[in-house]
Length: 470
Ligand code: GLU
Picture 1 (cartoon, helix red, strand yellow):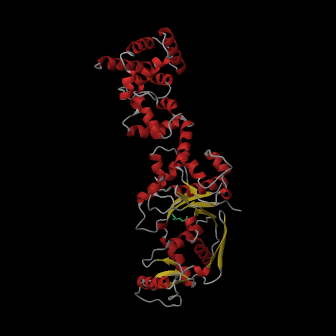
Picture 2: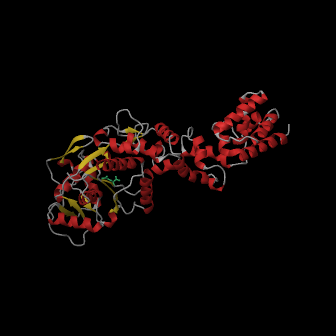
């Protein structure tokens, strides 16, 4: 058997939706697992709705998720001559015909059918017309079989059959000469030798029509795997009203691509009770057979949990690269001074659930002019604390070991010498250094800031207390 060929075929009419991203991911995983080929095809035949901006958004989303493609991106708008050629072939073989019915006529017939309780279906008025009618606009319809059954064995849903009687004589080319999705998708999947089509189950009703076209054109029919839709918490199809549905919006909200990938794959695929999968594990374990038959419900809490996991366990140097834009956005450039970002991240990654939280948490390291939280200052930067802070600063000035463990030893020695408890100095130092009462472990903060910066901040806090009117 030749190697598997898969594709992701988005229509560029918006952004990369989480549902589309999951479809892309499933295709990509299977291609990588089986050493196959993953193709990206942009379905932009709907010229009015397709935009370059949207194409870029899709490419950006794919790159962010690390879903690299082996062929493409192909654009259907470049392939109009190919489609026309195949339309011509079907016309010549009598498998397609020109339909001159006007939109008004069709609409009237549709309404009549509905009024009489019949399912609206093209009535075949133009099926028998063999000559061209000059000057009259026409669409081209596929001459679909009137009886029989079209079946396929869906890799996710199992055997599915449609009565051909139910299927219309599909329009394959519009009056303006542009081809229709159900036709272009068949031509492309066939000529690009796609062997398995994994896509959303909103396309299930298109599949029998497409199979009939494959057969009419003499192409082998690919295998199909229709993946259930993603639902919102109210079990309605996931939409904007449930929250962000654009993959890139999640990046902007501080999610890591590995969290998104791990989250998306589990929305419709499972491997026992496992929740955490590295990319390598996914490639190894992914199978189409384990895609669930029922729809996944989008759960933002779980995504957040995964994100926290990947931040906590992430490589600080890589997190630093990803964090930089968020810091720059906040007016902080670590390159301009302050601790090395990766070092600062080590003290913060345990607790941050998103890159936004990580960025916000890192700000104090780069802002010497600490802005004291009012309540924290009232409690910790008081005249009572003044002697402790002053004595601590003095001891720090001659302290050599500025590792986290060394700083811990300093605090211990200081407390013992002063006969005070850690609670009488730690919180004040914390507010002096960070401005707030919550921060990473104080020993880590001092170690990361270094002696000079810590001294500067202590002195500022001391002046703040001294200058503050009683
Ligand atoms: N362009 C179609 C869509 O975005 C893709 C359909 C398919 O995968 O066959 O829904």
